[in-house]
Every structure is written in structure tokens, then in C-alpha cells.
Amino acid sequence: MNSYQEDLLWGVQIEGILLGAVWFAFLLYVLLRTSKAYPRTLIVVLFSTKVIAAFLLQALFTYYYTDRSTADIYRFFDDGMILREALFVHPPDFLRMIFGLGMDDPSLRSSYFEVMNAWIKPFDAGLYNDNHFIIRLNALFALISFGFYEVHNVLFTFLSFVGLKWCVDALIPRSQDKPWALAIAVLFPASLLWLSGGLKEAVLMLGMGAAFKGLRVSRLKEAIPLVMIASLILLNLKLYVLAFLVPAMLSEFVRDKRNWSHWAMTLFWAVLISIGIVSAYAAGFDIPSSIAQKQHDFLNHVSEIASGSAFEMQRLRPEYLSLILGVPASLFTCLMRPLPMEVTSAPEAFLMLENILLWSLAITAAIGWYRNKAMLPSIGWILLFTVPLLILTGWVTPVFGAIMRYRAPALVVLLISLSPYIRSLWRSNNQIDAT
Image (cartoon, rainbow, N blue to C red; front, side, top):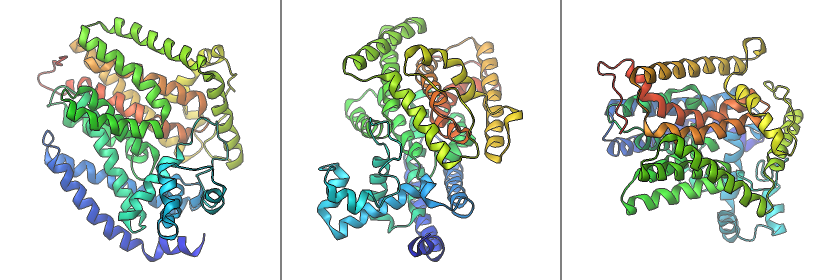
């Protein structure tokens, strides 16, 4: 750890917390002004809890896991600080890196990229590098944070909270169910831990929320900014999320306009997926090879860092049959493991407890659906979106801790959709409005 990092951790931490508190107060005011459909007390409690969780995560990676070069919350932040310094040393370099212009220039690589921890991935499948977007975002935030990570903590958590709220606004038709859904979305363990602070998943939630809300907004002038936000984030951060989201959203859009059944919508979705696969093949993009390579890169990376929650998994072959045969094991790994006999560390125990909570909520939702016999419109297309995400996570991820993080956005969106069924067991009038 160099002297700059020591100063950052010890000498100016209090100043960062104080400045972060100012930003927290301002952003909480913004949330209260723009969240009229929710009780004010609920917004205060949920946003405060989420910010506290972000600072607990920071403390964990500051005082327990002390290697900043392997902690994503600090890797992207530190690289962002290097990028920000270019603004004062050589402004044209800053603008080129922010906008992605002339990135093949050897001088940029030697002066900036090779000094950074995360700009160049040790194992790269070659499609695109999603680290760049989060590093650029940290550099832009640094212009108003004065280089304090605590401010970034609050800003990223705010983006995630807004995204979660947009998801609830778009997926929950009844105003009575919205506070319950938002509470589940914010307080679910993986949401508190991994959808807060300076992680990619926090920003991903904003992009997903913008996409969902854009689908439900009827006025074009309101939909356009949401679509722009969603496109900017998803195209640069998690392209595969967009690849799964577009067919599901188009299927829901057609179902809503033509009053199709969920079976007809699923068939239409299958046609769209088939067209996408054929188009990718025609464009020279080998989907099975890309997924298999991603898994192999992850396995190689795990073998280098010796992750404590890593596990053995069957290597995928670069062919569709291997992917199809791997679906059951993928879902089992993503939603059921670790089993009690596999738990050997605190992260694994935490994931097992979260799985117990997840399946308890799922069973509760199933009972609520059985009692009401009503299907909310969002359930069908959300399953078409989230299940492929969970399968992909199980295919390529050989670390239990990483699974908890990568599956978090999909699970939270799914739980939001299921929340009216869960709440129906505690309502005096337990009928679900499916309109």
C-alpha cells in the first residue's frame, strides 16, 4: 500500500464521511421530492439502510480484505482517480479516454492503462471491456467528490436506489403494493451487499430500472430520456443483459397490444431468440464459444487468486449441446448451492442463508398465487428475462461469492414481480389486481 492510499484510508477518511453525509442529505431530499407514491418514512429508512450497507462493504474491503488491487470497489475508484488526474496534467488525454477516442495510442497505454489495476483485464474474452465504463464514471464523479470514495459510495448507492424504485414503479400496478415491493428489493441481502456502493451492479440496476420504466411510460418525452439512460448503461456495462432484456420486453409489448396469452408471448419470445441466434451466427459471432471461453477465463482467474469460495464445475464445450445439457446443473448451482455440507467459510454460509430466504419467499409467493389464481402481467416476461440471466451465471461462475453478486439484479427484479403474491398472505383483502 503506498502513502497516497494510506492517507486515503486513515488521514482523510473523516473528511470523506462528512462530505458524503452532505451528499446523502441532498440526495435524500431529491428522493423525497420525487417519491410521492411512497411513505416518506419508508424512503428515509430504506435509503439510509442501503447507504449504511455500502459503508459496511467499504469497511470490509478496507480493514479485512486489505488488498485494494483485488477489491472492485477500490480498483475502479483508484483507476478513476488516475483518469481524473489526466484532466489537470493533459486535458486532451482526459477527453480522449472519457469519450473512447484514439484508444490505440501507445502513449495512453503506457501513461495510464498500464498503471491502472482494472483497465486491462488479465483474461479477456475479447467482445468488450465493461471495466472501462465504471472507471470513466468514477473519474466523472471525482470531479465533484474531491477524490473521497465515501462520496462515490453515496452517489452509486443513490443510482441503485433510483433504479430499484423505477423497477417497482414499472412492474407493480397497485399503489398499495409498491412500498412492500420496494422494501423487499432494498432489504434482500444480496441487494444490500452487492447493489450498493461503487460496484457495476449498482449502476446496472439504474439501467434496468430505466428500461422497465421506459416500457411503461406512455408519453414519448418521458420515455426517450429513460431509453437513453438504459441504452448508455446496458450497452457499455452488461451487453448480455440487454441481449436478454430486448426479446423479453418486445414480447411483453406485443402481448399487451394484442392481448395475447402468456403461452403465445412465450412462443413469440422463442422466435425472437432464434432470430437473434441466427443473426449472431451470420455476423460471425460464435455464442457457445464465447460462453465457454468466459467460463474458462473465470476458472483460470480463480486458479491464480485462489478464491476461498471457489468450487469445481464441469467445463463447457463450445457447442450448443453442451450449453443445453448444462442448464439443470447451472440453475441448481445458481439457486440451490452451496448445500450445507459444502459450507466451509462465512461467505458460503451467508449465501446458503440467502438461498433459504429466497426459497421461503418463493414458496410464500406460490401459496399467494394459488389462493388468488391471478397472473400479474409482469410475471411472464420477467421470467423470460431473469431465468436466462440465472442460467448464464450458473454456466460461467465457479465462485459462490461471485454467484451471489452476479445473480443479485435478476433475483431482485424477480422478487419485485412476486411481491404482490407475497403480500397477499398478509392483506385482509387478498385479491390481486391483475390489470
